[in-house]
Image 1 (spheres, rainbow, N blue to C red):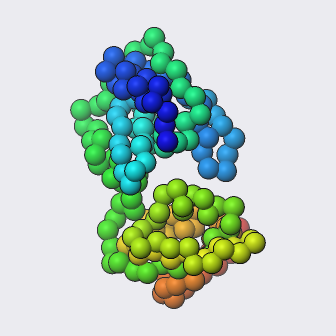
Image 2 (image 1 turned 90 degrees about the vertical axis):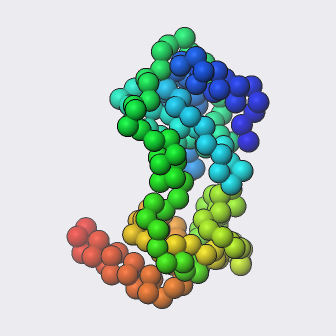
Length: 183
């Protein structure tokens, strides 16, 4: 969780319309430093997320527990555009944005990544069925969508769909096509 002094600095940044400097460690990456405009805070499933903008005005989402250090700057923040919806951005960034039919998704996940799923479950009724030395098996009820398939593919060879069979076959076709493209 985000320590209270850092939370207060984020709230002060929003109130005073100031930028912040923060050190953030994304999963599986080295910590990076960012100077950002804070546009809002979102709480979902017990996790606090900070919606920020880069110097170019691109919105980004930062999980509070991954912020290693934070400092309020004496610089004006970029204003949030009137056309930007904090609610819509958070909904799209924190969920698979296109709703679909509910499916029971069973995955084989590299054990080095299982903490991500424990930190933020991917769907309802998520449970880790087996913990091996290299692979873990988990299942959860999720919505089938193109965004789900994109998300699965983003894990590369660190994740494998076991069920449902129809999704597994679609991903086999996609990855075979990719292999031909890069082969």
